[in-house]
Structure formats: structure tokens, C-alpha cells
Amino acid sequence: MKDTLKIFVERIRDGEPEEIQEELLPLFMDIHEEEMRFEDKVALEGTAYVTDDWLILRMHIQTKVQLTCSVCNNKFEFEIDIQDFMHEEPLENIRDKVFDILPVVREHLLLAVPFYPQCGITTCLHRKEIEPYLKKDHPSNSPFKDL
Ligand SMILES: [Zn+2]
Image 1 (cartoon, rainbow, N blue to C red):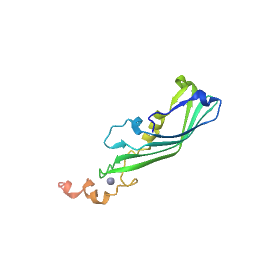
Image 2: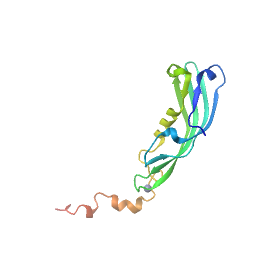
Image 3: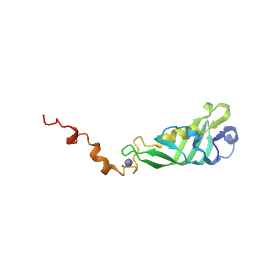
Image 4: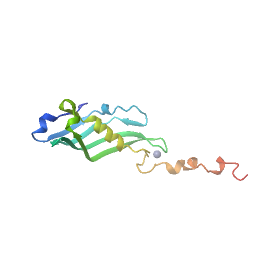
């Protein structure tokens, strides 16, 4: 497994698209939070090609991230599967004709992480059990409500 992935623009400028098929160590995610841990390999599959003045990347990106449920606080695994990742980079922005894919992949993976993670993906699996404690207007929490 690699920990870097670079596209050499000159190599594909006048030729065939470059096939991308890699499994990367998640080190490039560079996230050091207990609530969001990237520990699985990141699988990339797709192509890189050049049209006019652009480098185009099309990829399928898959990995898993360990998250913490924001309701019950349990850890759970969340699958990230970005089927239609696409990135267009102007060639004039690519220094030394070498494009590092990983910062772009990292950004997309972070966008795919739910802002409000829940252990059942769309809901918390333990919500029923802890709901009584979540209610702010529970009578026992506001003893002076009727005064
Ligand atoms: Zn939960």
C-alpha cells in the first residue's frame, strides 16, 4: 500500500488516460480526533486524463471511518462510498507538472462524514433508551414550571 499518489501530467497529456487503481494508507487523512478515526485503507479506482487545459480525475473512492454517535456516544463504523468523484484542475495550477491527488481526496472524504453522526446511520439505535434523559422539558428537570 502506498501513502502518496501523484499524477505526472506530461505523461498523459498526449497519450492515453492514466488508470488509477490504488489502495492507500489512511495516513494522509491526518485526523487526530477520538470522534473521527480513519484507520482503514482508502481504495481509489478511476482515470486521470487531460482535455484542453484541464486535468480531469474521475474516481470511485471507498473507505471506512470510525465515528462516535452524537446521541448515545457509542463508537460505530461508517462506510464512505463516493461513486462519482470528479475533480477538474486547471493545468496552469499544477506546479512542476505533478499533481498530488491526495489533498483533493481527503477533502471529499471529510465532506462525506456526517455532520451529526448517528450509530444507526440515519438515527441512533439507542435513542429510545436514552430519550427520557434528553428531554429538556421533563417535569423533574423543571420543578418550578407551575409557579
Ligand atoms: Zn447512538
